[in-house]
Amino acid sequence: MGLRNEYSTETSHEEELQEPEKYKVILLNDDYTSMDFVVEILVTIFHHSIEKAVNIMLKIHREGEGVCGVYTYEIAETKVEQVRKKARENEYPLRVRMEKA
Image (cartoon, rainbow, N blue to C red; front, side):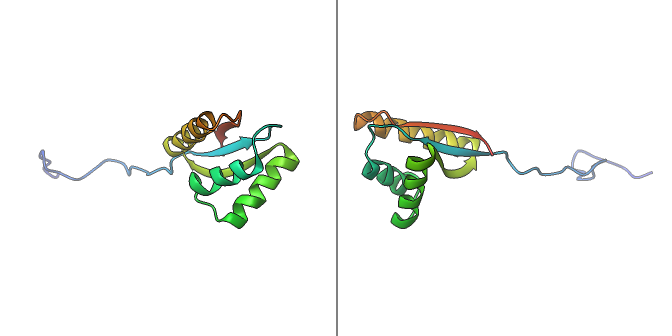
């Protein structure tokens, strides 16, 4: 039988590290928010290139919604708040939500 002390690193079971859950941040289409503003949001908050931002904006326009990115919960929540704040500041009704990926 081995001796154990307070400094022992021996464990009776392996601890498994789990990947954090991921969340999609989704912008929703509306009839008032300008396409340029949506592209600006996608570039400044989500760090997409202009080309990718335009493609996502067109998807939002055509299909009613589009995924801006997939993040851990805390980052997704921060992105949602940043979008809402910028939309309010610019008086746009742009809607955004997050959901489990």
